[in-house]
Image (cartoon, rainbow, N blue to C red):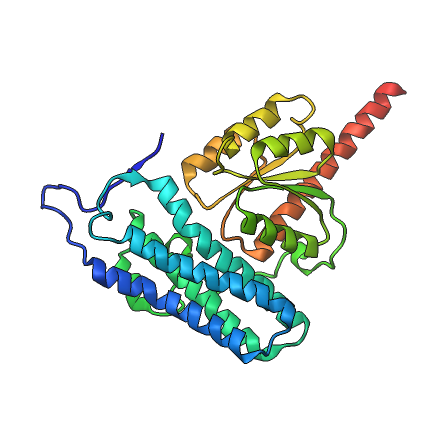
Length: 320
């Protein structure tokens, strides 16, 4: 069931006072940074023509965030009950696009030894992280006060990912340092075209063979006609959602052995637990950390190959 969202309703001490004009101002500040640096990169012409499409997508994502602020932080709408899951999904999707395309452009610029645009791309990436931190602090019940996030300024760490700094230097995983190679066939299932395109491009760069499906029904059709080493399945989709598609995978003898990783911006414990109980292999929350994404998928595929090898050995022994 959906969880209604209501902030500022009746309580023993009276309604919580919220200065929405200040919140709108604080949320618009990082968006202005995103739009400003993106527009400079578009106008200066220092990047190759192939970079322009992704820069325009980043700019469109910033404009979408501006629109959402007006829709959700309006005095009449802010305190109304609404589906928290849907709200969270709608607000995070554009910023996930901005972060994803920004990371792709940074990697491409570094590969082509284009140093000057990298600094501005990093500023865009930081601003998107700042906006995400503020949005989560204002819209999700948290022990972290939103004003503390705002006062931290640019580069503030999102409260949901804050970890203590212990001063321990951990080397990057082997999968992050390995050369690109063909790691197997993956199926990406997501109703959002930009999400599909970004994830497919990144995983192709890592050497995977990729197919995409915009709906659960098409994903099931593809999985029954082709063999995939892993399915990356979005949780929130129209029609058959991720939970329903996962259930159909696990109920079909031909598909039940295909490992499934759930993808969603709804990084909530109940959703994770439900997916794992239903047989999902793993869970990844957007926006993806590129190193973490590659390491998790690589580890899951290695585990699958080991199981396949053990099964083949058992079958050979039974035949002999």
